[in-house]
Amino acid sequence: MFSQQKGRSAGGATGLDDIVCLAENDIKLVEKSSQTQAKFSNSREFLRLKQLAARLHSLGPAPLFYFLREIEAGADLRRSLEEYAVLPADLIHAYGGDQFAPALRAVDGGRS
Image 1 (tube, one colour):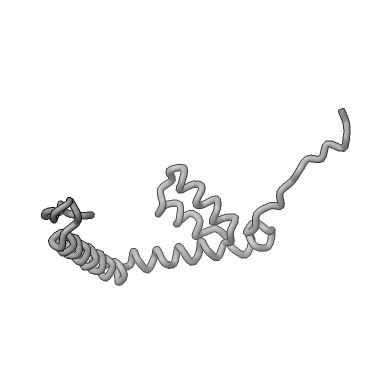
Image 2 (cartoon, one colour):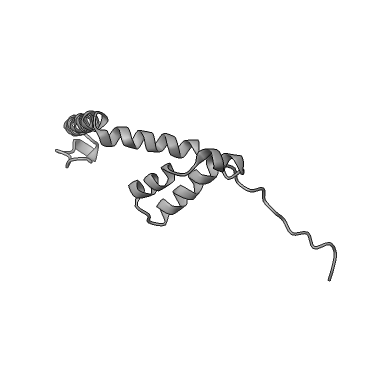
């Protein structure tokens, strides 16, 4: 987010005042982001989110794709993460559900 520029120097070029104003806003945003991250990083919600992310990642690329497709379609992020976290990774891996199925192509065979 940028604040309004303080003024223009001759010829409409950005002046030193403009640069100082933008730099102050950038510093405020970084400080606010750091404070929020520090609060969140020590919370139970943050630890649970890390655990859910690791669990989802361990399921493999295919389940991750299906998860992302659900989120893109408007599903609730946290609820979907919780649902995927309880899926049996060993069973998914054993039956090849962690990988995408090979692409199939129909071959006509020359029939008319």
